[in-house]
Image (tube, rainbow, N blue to C red; front, top):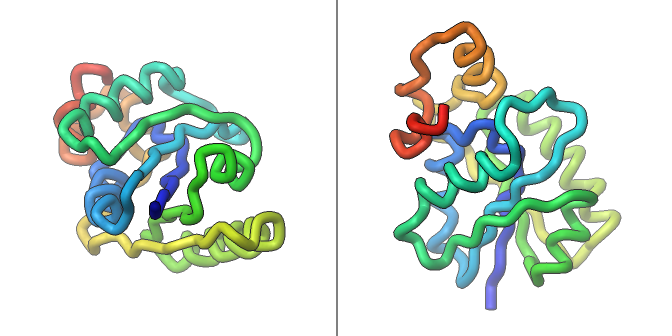
Length: 153
């Protein structure tokens, strides 16, 4: 069975995240969206709120399982039996950052393969950080997040 994890903070989930997930899920038998606790990011939504939003977005996709986790992502992969980790790439700087993490993860867990999915050009400028800034200043984020997320924001 091919099991993958798409880890992230999803604070909040964006259309770019949804695109990567929809393009990846069909490659695997079981697909986990892992809501990680990133202590270096100032959060907007609680893990429970992020989980609710993701469940609303993917309620009709039986292969997707949404879970929160803490600690090393490779250890979480092992705990759920995931041999693949999906990462979205929007920009060259994303690639450099993700490449370094993938290399470290490979050193820690050589049995887990990182797979990079390049975002569609229209989504390359969308990030949760920018969406959070727009929300903090009472701006309209409807073009950047899935419609299912709007009631929670």
